[in-house]
Image (cartoon, rainbow, N blue to C red):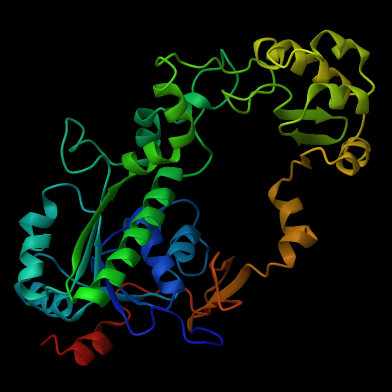
Length: 386
């Protein structure tokens, strides 16, 4: 249940036919804005992500499943059963939003593609999330996050020159596609409010990752398509000059962003940077040499020492935190972004809350992800699915 005020999407019904991460993350965002999400699952095991990563030891489902599917309802539907399919179509005819991320061709075989569904529910906002879009040579390739990262070029930017491609340590394609899909759905709902008509919203992991690189791809395409050279020392951004990067101190790491070399040389007492002080072009052309010198200096002191020097001088810098340090920080705690979701059978999971505040309040939901088919009886009765 939401604590406090009514949320913007209260009263809307979302039928979530997706699984894994991208679609469920999209519907999680809608749920945090007040929508009711009814998750369609296979009777024999449900969403495949129930078995991803580590089990939480209580529900038998993975903790990632609970994180992405908290406070949703589960309706177990056998897609090979005529009775169940009639019930599902009846539910969709009464819904406001449908989200699906089946492999291309599957939803058409089920008779639940946009054209078919629009005929019975013209007000429905229909969202389809795929791996690589609706056409092209990769359409039927597995829409998996690591593979989408590889094909998008995004992992090629990570790491130091000569290191080889470095994938992100989390499923950014899934999460970004889910966020993009939620954005499209919200826009379509606004349009429906004005016209009464539904819309087809489409995105993919590949498209989301391309958009994620808008800054650097735009530079690349407008500079002769010349590939940038990553820094071989403290690599952080292929197009930014020294000192931009992460440096190791005696007790941790410090990130230093855009900073004029003369100012940094003075603050760090580094006369060896004198050859680079007066010509800003060298901050990029001699980036590796400059960063190597800075790295040697930073390595001689603690993070606190350097922060005490740099922060009062308005240098953009920060201690690099691990998760335990993040969770213990006052800056994190004051945001109140954690919640414990529970279920009647004793399941209790600590997870995050919505990143969005509405009218000064952050939505809070206290129920863990559902058991497979947990809400079948109630939903069949409420929506008259018999």
